Length: 343
Image (cartoon, rainbow, N blue to C red; front, side):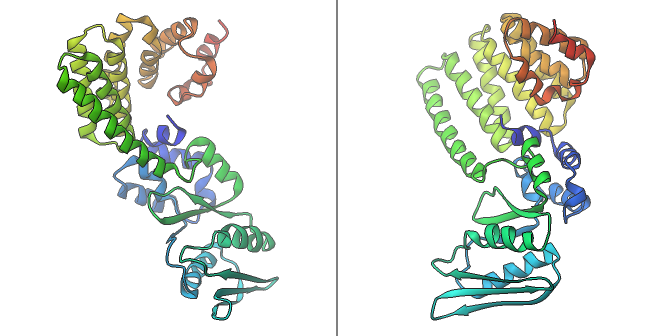
Protein backbone atom coordinates (compact mmCIF):
# COMPACT_ATOMS: atom_id res chain seq x y z
CA UNK A 1 0.00 0.00 0.00
CA UNK A 2 1.38 3.45 -0.89
CA UNK A 3 2.09 6.07 1.77
CA UNK A 4 -0.75 8.39 0.75
CA UNK A 5 -3.32 5.60 0.94
CA UNK A 6 -1.95 4.43 4.29
CA UNK A 7 -2.28 7.95 5.67
CA UNK A 8 -5.78 8.80 4.45
CA UNK A 9 -7.13 5.45 5.65
CA UNK A 10 -6.32 6.62 9.18
CA UNK A 11 -8.85 9.43 8.86
CA UNK A 12 -9.03 13.22 8.87
CA UNK A 13 -7.35 13.75 12.23
CA UNK A 14 -4.33 11.71 11.14
CA UNK A 15 -4.14 13.70 7.90
CA UNK A 16 -4.30 17.00 9.81
CA UNK A 17 -1.65 15.73 12.24
CA UNK A 18 0.63 14.90 9.31
CA UNK A 19 0.15 18.39 7.87
CA UNK A 20 0.98 19.89 11.24
CA UNK A 21 4.03 17.65 11.62
CA UNK A 22 5.64 18.91 8.41
CA UNK A 23 4.89 22.56 9.21
CA UNK A 24 2.22 22.99 6.54
CA UNK A 25 0.09 25.47 8.48
CA UNK A 26 3.08 27.71 9.19
CA UNK A 27 3.62 28.38 5.49
CA UNK A 28 0.31 27.69 3.73
CA UNK A 29 -1.93 30.54 2.59
CA UNK A 30 -4.83 28.45 3.89
CA UNK A 31 -5.39 28.27 7.63
CA UNK A 32 -5.85 25.00 9.51
CA UNK A 33 -9.51 25.91 9.98
CA UNK A 34 -9.99 26.39 6.23
CA UNK A 35 -8.34 23.09 5.33
CA UNK A 36 -10.25 21.29 8.09
CA UNK A 37 -13.48 22.74 6.70
CA UNK A 38 -12.63 21.43 3.24
CA UNK A 39 -11.72 18.02 4.68
CA UNK A 40 -15.09 17.83 6.42
CA UNK A 41 -16.75 18.36 3.04
CA UNK A 42 -14.86 15.39 1.57
CA UNK A 43 -16.79 12.15 2.10
CA UNK A 44 -14.11 9.95 0.54
CA UNK A 45 -10.75 9.74 2.37
CA UNK A 46 -8.94 9.10 -0.92
CA UNK A 47 -9.79 12.70 -1.89
CA UNK A 48 -8.33 14.44 1.19
CA UNK A 49 -5.56 15.79 -1.03
CA UNK A 50 -8.07 17.98 -2.87
CA UNK A 51 -8.51 20.06 0.29
CA UNK A 52 -5.01 21.53 0.08
CA UNK A 53 -5.14 23.64 -3.09
CA UNK A 54 -3.98 27.25 -3.29
CA UNK A 55 -4.68 27.45 -7.02
CA UNK A 56 -7.46 25.56 -8.81
CA UNK A 57 -8.59 26.00 -12.41
CA UNK A 58 -9.78 24.13 -15.48
CA UNK A 59 -6.70 23.27 -17.57
CA UNK A 60 -8.76 23.75 -20.74
CA UNK A 61 -10.07 27.08 -21.99
CA UNK A 62 -6.78 28.91 -22.60
CA UNK A 63 -7.42 29.81 -26.24
CA UNK A 64 -7.40 33.56 -25.62
CA UNK A 65 -5.78 36.23 -23.48
CA UNK A 66 -8.78 36.20 -21.12
CA UNK A 67 -7.94 32.77 -19.67
CA UNK A 68 -4.33 33.73 -18.94
CA UNK A 69 -5.30 37.12 -17.52
CA UNK A 70 -7.78 35.53 -15.12
CA UNK A 71 -5.26 32.91 -13.97
CA UNK A 72 -2.40 35.41 -13.68
CA UNK A 73 -4.48 37.64 -11.40
CA UNK A 74 -5.14 34.69 -9.10
CA UNK A 75 -1.45 33.78 -9.09
CA UNK A 76 -0.38 37.32 -8.20
CA UNK A 77 -2.98 37.48 -5.42
CA UNK A 78 -1.56 34.25 -4.01
CA UNK A 79 2.13 35.21 -4.12
CA UNK A 80 1.51 38.78 -2.90
CA UNK A 81 4.10 40.46 -5.11
CA UNK A 82 4.01 44.26 -5.16
CA UNK A 83 3.00 44.93 -8.76
CA UNK A 84 3.49 48.17 -10.68
CA UNK A 85 1.82 47.06 -13.90
CA UNK A 86 0.40 43.92 -15.52
CA UNK A 87 -0.53 43.54 -19.16
CA UNK A 88 -2.00 40.49 -20.93
CA UNK A 89 -2.80 40.93 -24.62
CA UNK A 90 -3.52 38.92 -27.77
CA UNK A 91 -1.41 39.56 -30.88
CA UNK A 92 -3.27 38.46 -33.98
CA UNK A 93 -0.25 38.48 -36.31
CA UNK A 94 1.60 35.87 -34.27
CA UNK A 95 -1.50 34.23 -32.75
CA UNK A 96 0.10 34.64 -29.35
CA UNK A 97 -0.62 35.94 -25.88
CA UNK A 98 1.94 38.46 -24.64
CA UNK A 99 2.33 38.89 -20.90
CA UNK A 100 4.14 41.77 -19.19
CA UNK A 101 4.68 42.02 -15.45
CA UNK A 102 6.40 45.05 -13.93
CA UNK A 103 7.36 44.99 -10.26
CA UNK A 104 9.36 47.53 -8.29
CA UNK A 105 12.57 45.64 -9.04
CA UNK A 106 12.09 43.81 -12.34
CA UNK A 107 10.25 43.64 -15.64
CA UNK A 108 9.11 40.29 -17.04
CA UNK A 109 7.87 39.24 -20.45
CA UNK A 110 6.42 35.92 -21.55
CA UNK A 111 5.03 34.94 -24.94
CA UNK A 112 2.62 32.04 -25.50
CA UNK A 113 1.83 30.73 -28.96
CA UNK A 114 -1.81 29.57 -28.96
CA UNK A 115 -1.54 26.05 -30.39
CA UNK A 116 -4.51 24.64 -28.46
CA UNK A 117 -6.91 25.61 -25.71
CA UNK A 118 -4.93 23.77 -23.02
CA UNK A 119 -2.78 25.83 -20.68
CA UNK A 120 0.80 26.33 -21.79
CA UNK A 121 3.03 23.71 -20.13
CA UNK A 122 5.72 26.19 -19.09
CA UNK A 123 3.59 29.13 -17.96
CA UNK A 124 3.57 28.23 -14.26
CA UNK A 125 6.61 25.98 -13.95
CA UNK A 126 9.08 28.03 -15.98
CA UNK A 127 7.78 31.59 -16.16
CA UNK A 128 6.19 31.96 -12.72
CA UNK A 129 8.23 29.52 -10.61
CA UNK A 130 11.69 29.64 -12.16
CA UNK A 131 11.75 33.24 -13.31
CA UNK A 132 9.37 35.58 -11.49
CA UNK A 133 9.44 33.98 -8.04
CA UNK A 134 13.20 33.41 -8.15
CA UNK A 135 14.03 36.99 -9.16
CA UNK A 136 11.57 38.39 -6.62
CA UNK A 137 13.34 36.34 -3.91
CA UNK A 138 10.22 34.42 -2.92
CA UNK A 139 11.11 31.11 -1.29
CA UNK A 140 7.98 29.28 -2.43
CA UNK A 141 6.84 27.64 -5.62
CA UNK A 142 3.64 26.35 -7.15
CA UNK A 143 3.63 22.55 -7.04
CA UNK A 144 1.05 20.69 -9.08
CA UNK A 145 -0.82 17.95 -7.21
CA UNK A 146 -2.67 14.96 -8.70
CA UNK A 147 -6.32 15.36 -9.69
CA UNK A 148 -9.01 12.97 -10.90
CA UNK A 149 -10.28 15.16 -13.76
CA UNK A 150 -9.04 17.85 -16.17
CA UNK A 151 -8.76 20.53 -13.51
CA UNK A 152 -5.32 21.63 -12.35
CA UNK A 153 -4.59 22.08 -8.66
CA UNK A 154 -1.46 23.63 -7.17
CA UNK A 155 -0.15 24.19 -3.67
CA UNK A 156 2.11 27.16 -2.93
CA UNK A 157 4.89 26.05 -0.60
CA UNK A 158 8.62 26.12 0.11
CA UNK A 159 10.47 23.24 -1.54
CA UNK A 160 11.37 21.78 1.88
CA UNK A 161 7.75 21.48 3.02
CA UNK A 162 6.67 20.00 -0.30
CA UNK A 163 9.45 17.39 -0.04
CA UNK A 164 8.30 16.48 3.47
CA UNK A 165 4.71 16.18 2.22
CA UNK A 166 5.83 13.69 -0.41
CA UNK A 167 7.95 11.73 2.06
CA UNK A 168 5.19 11.46 4.66
CA UNK A 169 2.47 10.61 2.12
CA UNK A 170 0.48 13.84 2.43
CA UNK A 171 0.80 14.19 -1.35
CA UNK A 172 1.20 11.22 -3.75
CA UNK A 173 4.46 11.34 -5.66
CA UNK A 174 2.79 10.78 -9.03
CA UNK A 175 0.67 13.29 -10.97
CA UNK A 176 -1.14 10.36 -12.60
CA UNK A 177 -2.00 8.81 -9.23
CA UNK A 178 -5.80 9.06 -9.45
CA UNK A 179 -5.99 8.15 -13.13
CA UNK A 180 -3.96 5.00 -12.44
CA UNK A 181 -6.29 4.21 -9.56
CA UNK A 182 -9.27 4.51 -11.90
CA UNK A 183 -7.61 2.07 -14.30
CA UNK A 184 -6.97 -0.33 -11.40
CA UNK A 185 -10.60 -0.07 -10.27
CA UNK A 186 -11.79 -1.00 -13.76
CA UNK A 187 -9.40 -3.95 -13.85
CA UNK A 188 -10.57 -5.14 -10.43
CA UNK A 189 -14.20 -5.11 -11.55
CA UNK A 190 -13.31 -7.28 -14.53
CA UNK A 191 -11.33 -9.73 -12.37
CA UNK A 192 -14.12 -9.91 -9.79
CA UNK A 193 -16.65 -10.73 -12.51
CA UNK A 194 -14.38 -13.51 -13.81
CA UNK A 195 -14.10 -15.18 -10.40
CA UNK A 196 -17.81 -14.75 -9.75
CA UNK A 197 -18.40 -16.69 -12.94
CA UNK A 198 -16.13 -19.43 -11.56
CA UNK A 199 -18.34 -19.53 -8.45
CA UNK A 200 -21.42 -19.93 -10.64
CA UNK A 201 -19.70 -22.82 -12.41
CA UNK A 202 -18.59 -24.39 -9.11
CA UNK A 203 -20.37 -23.13 -5.97
CA UNK A 204 -18.03 -25.25 -3.80
CA UNK A 205 -14.83 -23.59 -5.03
CA UNK A 206 -13.36 -22.05 -1.86
CA UNK A 207 -10.42 -20.53 -3.78
CA UNK A 208 -12.79 -18.64 -6.08
CA UNK A 209 -14.67 -17.27 -3.07
CA UNK A 210 -11.37 -16.24 -1.48
CA UNK A 211 -10.20 -14.54 -4.69
CA UNK A 212 -13.40 -12.52 -4.95
CA UNK A 213 -13.06 -11.55 -1.29
CA UNK A 214 -9.47 -10.45 -1.72
CA UNK A 215 -10.17 -8.44 -4.90
CA UNK A 216 -13.12 -6.75 -3.18
CA UNK A 217 -10.78 -5.96 -0.27
CA UNK A 218 -8.39 -4.26 -2.69
CA UNK A 219 -11.30 -2.41 -4.31
CA UNK A 220 -12.50 -1.26 -0.88
CA UNK A 221 -9.12 0.33 -0.17
CA UNK A 222 -9.53 2.38 -3.34
CA UNK A 223 -13.16 3.47 -3.01
CA UNK A 224 -13.86 3.12 0.74
CA UNK A 225 -17.40 1.90 0.12
CA UNK A 226 -19.14 0.09 3.00
CA UNK A 227 -21.08 -2.20 0.67
CA UNK A 228 -17.83 -3.37 -0.95
CA UNK A 229 -16.32 -4.05 2.47
CA UNK A 230 -19.31 -6.13 3.56
CA UNK A 231 -19.31 -8.10 0.32
CA UNK A 232 -15.61 -8.85 0.80
CA UNK A 233 -16.31 -10.13 4.32
CA UNK A 234 -19.10 -12.34 3.00
CA UNK A 235 -16.82 -13.98 0.45
CA UNK A 236 -14.03 -14.55 2.98
CA UNK A 237 -16.57 -16.12 5.32
CA UNK A 238 -17.90 -18.39 2.57
CA UNK A 239 -14.37 -19.49 1.63
CA UNK A 240 -13.78 -20.46 5.26
CA UNK A 241 -17.08 -22.32 5.52
CA UNK A 242 -16.00 -24.41 2.51
CA UNK A 243 -12.44 -24.83 3.80
CA UNK A 244 -12.02 -24.20 7.57
CA UNK A 245 -8.22 -24.35 7.15
CA UNK A 246 -8.22 -21.45 4.69
CA UNK A 247 -5.84 -19.39 6.87
CA UNK A 248 -5.22 -16.77 4.17
CA UNK A 249 -8.95 -15.96 4.17
CA UNK A 250 -8.90 -15.51 7.97
CA UNK A 251 -5.74 -13.39 7.73
CA UNK A 252 -6.90 -11.05 4.97
CA UNK A 253 -10.35 -10.78 6.52
CA UNK A 254 -8.62 -9.52 9.65
CA UNK A 255 -6.53 -6.97 7.76
CA UNK A 256 -9.64 -5.81 5.91
CA UNK A 257 -11.27 -5.10 9.28
CA UNK A 258 -8.15 -3.24 10.46
CA UNK A 259 -8.45 -0.91 7.48
CA UNK A 260 -12.18 -0.46 7.92
CA UNK A 261 -11.56 0.35 11.59
CA UNK A 262 -9.13 3.10 10.57
CA UNK A 263 -11.60 4.61 8.12
CA UNK A 264 -14.51 4.47 10.56
CA UNK A 265 -12.53 5.03 13.77
CA UNK A 266 -14.09 1.85 15.17
CA UNK A 267 -12.12 0.10 17.92
CA UNK A 268 -14.55 -2.83 17.96
CA UNK A 269 -13.69 -3.57 14.33
CA UNK A 270 -10.01 -3.64 15.31
CA UNK A 271 -10.74 -6.26 17.94
CA UNK A 272 -12.75 -8.30 15.43
CA UNK A 273 -9.83 -8.06 13.00
CA UNK A 274 -7.42 -9.30 15.66
CA UNK A 275 -9.65 -12.31 16.31
CA UNK A 276 -9.68 -13.16 12.58
CA UNK A 277 -5.87 -12.88 12.40
CA UNK A 278 -5.56 -14.99 15.55
CA UNK A 279 -7.60 -17.72 13.86
CA UNK A 280 -5.23 -17.57 10.89
CA UNK A 281 -2.23 -17.87 13.22
CA UNK A 282 -3.73 -20.93 14.95
CA UNK A 283 -3.83 -22.67 11.56
CA UNK A 284 -0.50 -21.39 10.27
CA UNK A 285 2.01 -19.63 12.53
CA UNK A 286 3.46 -17.84 9.50
CA UNK A 287 0.47 -15.48 9.93
CA UNK A 288 2.03 -13.90 13.03
CA UNK A 289 2.85 -10.47 11.59
CA UNK A 290 -0.66 -9.20 10.89
CA UNK A 291 -1.65 -10.40 14.36
CA UNK A 292 1.25 -8.41 15.83
CA UNK A 293 0.12 -5.31 13.92
CA UNK A 294 -3.40 -5.66 15.26
CA UNK A 295 -2.18 -5.73 18.83
CA UNK A 296 0.06 -2.74 18.09
CA UNK A 297 -2.95 -0.79 16.85
CA UNK A 298 -4.85 -1.32 20.12
CA UNK A 299 -1.71 -0.57 22.18
CA UNK A 300 -1.43 -4.09 23.58
CA UNK A 301 2.34 -3.85 23.76
CA UNK A 302 3.02 -7.27 25.29
CA UNK A 303 1.18 -9.22 22.60
CA UNK A 304 2.33 -6.87 19.84
CA UNK A 305 5.98 -7.47 20.66
CA UNK A 306 5.43 -11.19 21.31
CA UNK A 307 4.08 -11.84 17.82
CA UNK A 308 6.46 -9.37 16.21
CA UNK A 309 9.36 -11.31 17.73
CA UNK A 310 7.95 -14.56 16.32
CA UNK A 311 7.58 -12.92 12.89
CA UNK A 312 11.19 -11.75 12.84
CA UNK A 313 12.60 -15.07 14.07
CA UNK A 314 10.64 -16.95 11.39
CA UNK A 315 11.66 -14.43 8.69
CA UNK A 316 8.01 -13.57 8.03
CA UNK A 317 8.93 -9.88 7.80
CA UNK A 318 12.18 -7.91 7.51
CA UNK A 319 13.44 -5.36 10.03
CA UNK A 320 13.30 -2.56 7.44
CA UNK A 321 9.68 -3.34 6.57
CA UNK A 322 8.68 -3.25 10.23
CA UNK A 323 10.40 0.09 10.85
CA UNK A 324 8.69 1.58 7.79
CA UNK A 325 5.26 0.17 8.70
CA UNK A 326 2.94 2.91 10.01
CA UNK A 327 1.37 0.43 12.43
CA UNK A 328 4.55 0.65 14.53
CA UNK A 329 4.95 4.42 14.41
CA UNK A 330 4.21 4.85 18.13
CA UNK A 331 6.78 2.20 19.05
CA UNK A 332 9.84 3.49 17.22
CA UNK A 333 11.39 5.01 20.34
CA UNK A 334 10.24 2.22 22.69
CA UNK A 335 13.24 0.43 24.23
CA UNK A 336 11.57 -2.99 24.24
CA UNK A 337 10.62 -2.56 20.60
CA UNK A 338 14.19 -1.57 19.69
CA UNK A 339 15.65 -4.48 21.67
CA UNK A 340 13.67 -7.00 19.64
CA UNK A 341 15.87 -6.21 16.65
CA UNK A 342 18.99 -6.93 18.69
CA UNK A 343 17.91 -10.34 19.93
